[in-house]
Image 1: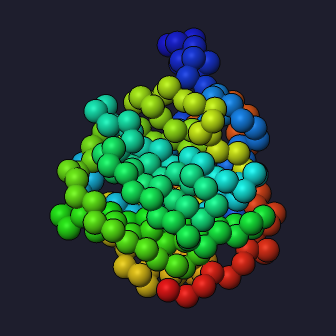
Image 2 (image 1 turned 180 degrees about the vertical axis):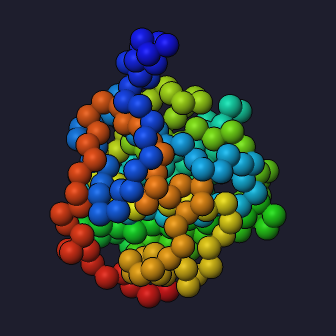
Length: 229
């Protein structure tokens, strides 16, 4: 049995582990199709509403794929992508909307939150405290495969090096409900907030593949204070 477990770890990459990553980052070192982190949610779904928050420090100024959630039937079930400077693209069950002219700190951390409610269709994106919103009506999301660093073109795979993330990601939290604006502002300002119940950076279940390092966040003290809503 011990040999079988060891073989499974070799085949699947590093073993899934739960860890408090407070004050740490995932560092994606180079363009590839093999460097990524797989996250295991604490709540499986289906999700009729979601809030995602994270901080991004891209190496090349363009973040590309910030967060990829696929389901067996939808490769872009909940995808956050930075297509250009100040431009954030969201996909919900393969429906797409671009939020343009958003704040964008170059060579600094950017704090991003995204909410979606299937009942109303209201979809909101905050970047460094600035909000834009639109209506995207779609069904709930179930059976998630969640990956950081790559964009899934199929459930759990088919990565494209042109869409990968290079740089640092941190403070990733997800909730299966819509956070109100005060709670999002608390996250943006690094105040006390309730950690995600789907993904919790303070108790994250993850494994890393390829050249992905878990490192202390040495630049936290340099983070620019976000603008107000």
